[in-house]
Image 1 (cartoon, rainbow, N blue to C red):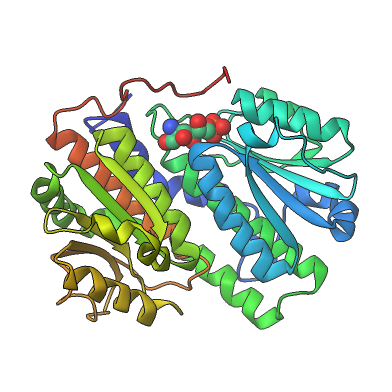
Image 2: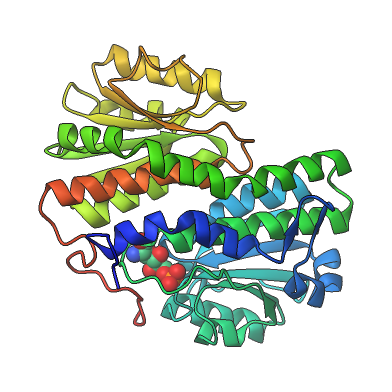
Length: 367
Ligand code: M6R
């Protein structure tokens, strides 16, 4: 079943050009300039009147939710909160019938997410599911939804399910923005084309960056700690990169918004610490370059994800991983790929069972 790949994780990383396409297929028509999302149509009135959206998830799905927050706020001008399901279910949150809850789950069986939704439903909220496993418990409790169509994910670390979740959130945010009249039509069309171009750009990363990433993996495989930093849409990618590394390599890693570094984590920086910056070319670029300089000044080892053709960071970093240029709204679908590969290859270098990391289960069906 693994085909030519040594592990399911590597196979699933490599499937992403196809799985992202599958999550867009039949929904995105860039040529004609429209999005079809029947699940959203089903609760259109609720969404028009919604006072806020609450996104509920765990782990990697929660990271996708954070990207969803940025997307929906920016494009739809609607309040969004992102909640860890385990906290949300126990703290007696304020929920009203004007709330729309978006549940994100690969397995559709995560116990905390399921119970959080049951509670919200009792209080009258409408639930929209972004779920991978068809007919799963979470899919069944939703009022409407859009499946991610990533196919079965065997590796314990979520990879292709994450990019499918983000792709569906982008469709959702764009479609809702159009309904609410909060997005300029020309910009809307531009983003549809950007989204349509993503699968080929992911394929380019997989075709061209593996050797560079393997070299980085060999160089830093003995590190005890890693920091991952990003801003804006790439902040959740920093969190996701750090989670992948922890799960697969057992190396301690933390993700932070890059500017938050000065508020504590910078104390960790010394000549042994690799700091992975997600430094693609976007509105934050200048700021992140100055964050990189601050790490350099403290002798940290900078590794950076950069945009193709952007040389700014090359002299400041010990190593770079390159991704194609893209609008910052779709960029996280690209910048996460090298970080998945980096965790994978460090895990392999350390001789670990990357498909079944210790202590972890594919779906967490107990609280
Ligand atoms: O199946 P779910 O998306 O609900 O699972 C949520 C988390 O348990 C999951 O994302 C977990 O963090 C993964 N091991 C991440 O790689």
